[in-house]
Image (cartoon, rainbow, N blue to C red; front, side, top):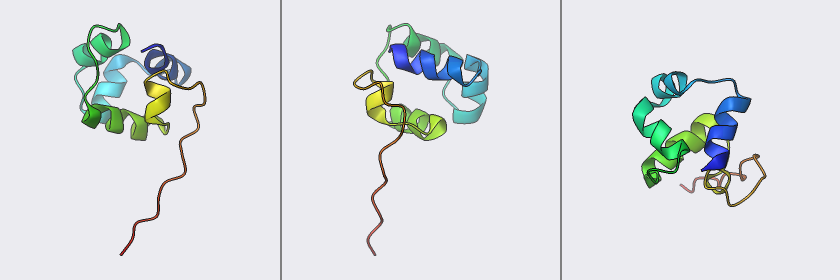
Length: 75
């Protein structure tokens, strides 16, 4: 998960900072970044929202950091 670490470093965040902001334990973030563990869908959504990026970027499926346009909620 190269992009997960890349976006954290670009934003000048430590793993502890990400833990404090997202609630995802630092040890889990480290395992995600080192490829030892695949993130849960819930944690991917939390991280994508935190970094304002797409799940595809976090999963190394694209190099485009910009998030997709969100769908408008229907009433």
